[in-house]
Length: 151
Image (cartoon, rainbow, N blue to C red; front, side, top):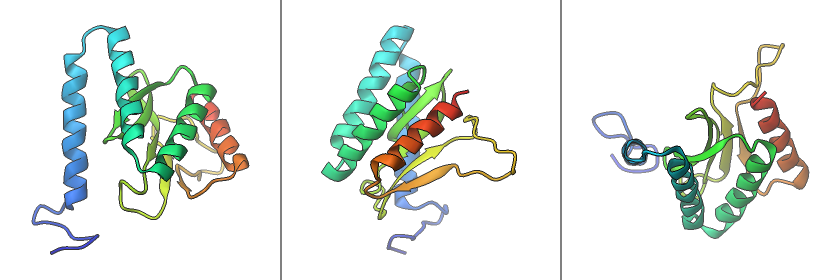
């Protein structure tokens, strides 16, 4: 089968297999890094390099998101997460950016993992947001959510 939703015999699309291979490579690279300061600097350099590789529109958006996250929660450490920018505490990713153009989707995504403290008394809360030319107000909301997620 071919096409956007096509899967192979193992049930994973070519895009999903590529993301898994990237994640495996990320884990190998992490294991090779020994000192914490070296590891943190290398992880951030990896994230910035990945952002620099993005198509222009997503790159600009990813740069804004990176700035928002690192300002709202400086205690989070940038690191690659399935080949895309992620932000972790104690090695566990709390939030992440997915390039829509790199994922061949019509919009980019900013999401939170189960590690994020976004639980709501209502029992329902959003864990990811579509980003398609977000307003300044929308980006400010993401910053507030990041602050909330780390508390």
